[in-house]
Length: 240
Image (cartoon, rainbow, N blue to C red; front, top):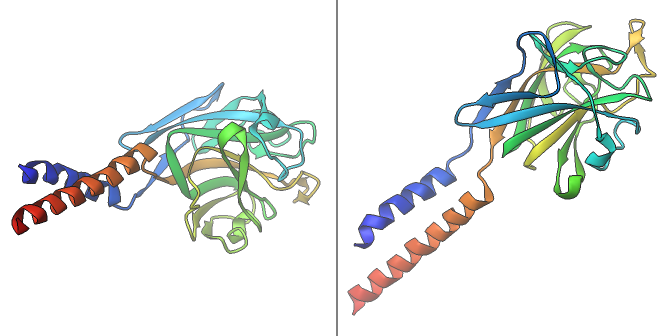
């Protein structure tokens, strides 16, 4: 009888131990201004995206409560940003009274593995936070500028020097997993590039690995315990 229930437990163990594969959510679509945007990838996760506004210095955020003011998501065929602002429709921090960010929420835990960004100037920066308990923000990076690979933390391809598209693949997937992420910049808009305000970008796609839920890990551990107990009972029966 032991053999019958050991088979599904073993299958569960193997499925839970299998490495996660990165998936990519494409964010572009019909041009529209939206209160929020939902993007589902069957079999992976659903992302809910909101625009948030803040006034703190970029790179100094510590809690989601600092981004309590909501904005409008601007969707275009190539990607999304925040409607309005100094560099519409980018996610920009060029106006000290109206810094912009995107809050991305998932129905499953994710580890970020890559981003595709557009409207990239030579000095644009990227700041990503993971949102933890109580809204606490954990800075996930990055140094450097976007179109040179974020200080060596990402491989990149850049299609143009100014207002180009940059595809980033993180050299080491961001090991901390979260259900919510904040995307903004690390610098204010006091730095100019080509005569234009220099901090902002648009997100064309997000790549991430779906992380097994804590309950799945608990089932996996319980499965190991059941298999071990069954083996001990079997060895005891044989020796007896």
